[in-house]
Amino acid sequence: MPEKIIICIVEDNADLREGMNMMVQLSKSYQLGGSYSNAEEALREIPAIKPTAVLMDINLPGMSGIQCVNALKTLIPSTFFMMCTVYDDSDTIFDSLKAGAIGYILKTEGPQKIMEALEDMIAGGSPMSSSIARKVVASFAKMGKDNVLIESLSDREKMVLDELAKGLIGKEVADELNISWGTVRKHVQNIYKKLHVNT
Image (cartoon, rainbow, N blue to C red; front, side, top):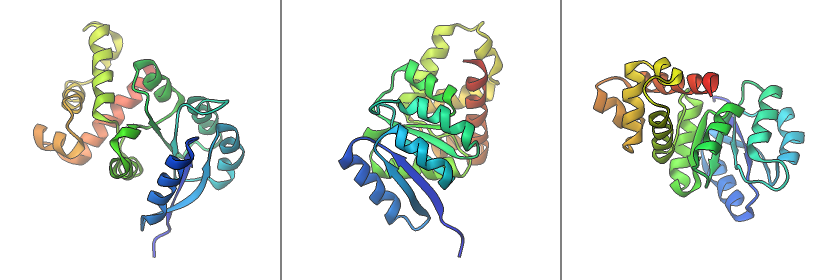
C-alpha cells in the first residue's frame, strides 16, 4: 500500500480548521500531520513533521501566514505551501508567491475545490482560484506591454493565463488550447517561477 501523503493545516478559525481537518482525514490518500491555530505553533511543530503539503491561512494572530511560509520554506524546502484565504488583493497574492506559496485558493471555493487544488499541487501543479488568476492578469495589464515580467512570459504562457482569468480550470484550459493537462500545468508552474523571480 502506498504511503499516505502528510498534510498540515494552519487556520485560526476553530470551526473552519475542524472542517479542513475532517476533509483531510476523510480522504483515502492523505494523513493529517498536524493542525495549528497560529503561525508560531506551526513554526515550532511542522519542521519535525516534514509534511508533503501545508494549507496556510494568511490572517493569523501574531505572525502572518505569509511570514510563516517564508520561515518554513527555508527549513523544509521540499514542502508545498498553498494559501487558503479570504484575501484576493494583488499585494497579498504577490507577497504569498514571493514567500514561496505554490497555490493560492479562496476559502469561499469550498471544501471540494480546496481538496482538488491540494491534489493538483501535490501532482506538480500550481493551482489558483480564477479570481486570483484574473488579478494576476490585471496586474500584468497595468504593467504595460514593455514590462520585463510580461516579456519574460512566452506567448503560450500568456494564453494559459488569459484562459485561467476567464474562470476556466486546468483541464478546461487544456481543452480550450488543445494541449495536454500536463502541458498546462507546466506553463502555470513557469508563470509562477517567473513571478517569484521578477516580483
